[in-house]
Length: 103
Image (spheres, rainbow, N blue to C red):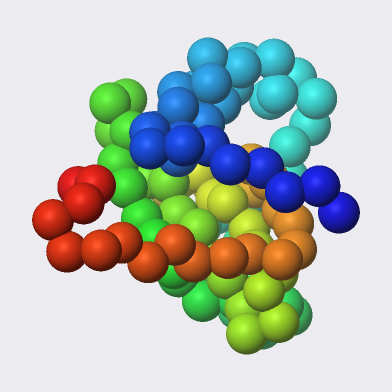
């Protein structure tokens, strides 16, 4: 499987690109439901737990869920509680930063 690197600002760049494409993606029928329903399915069926979270400039919650088997799901939730699965994949890897480097 190909490995992608988003660089220093990768996740924020990905989020920005996702938000720009959200209307187009929404037309493509992303799996969306109440956040509690999707999180329940992610945690029970795939054994994924929250790995990272952030809030977009538009006030949406971006969450990354990861399992011990390294499967992952990116979930975007609106302020009204509607959540959509933005992406899923395998082979999640954590990056460990040296003190004083990065954020």
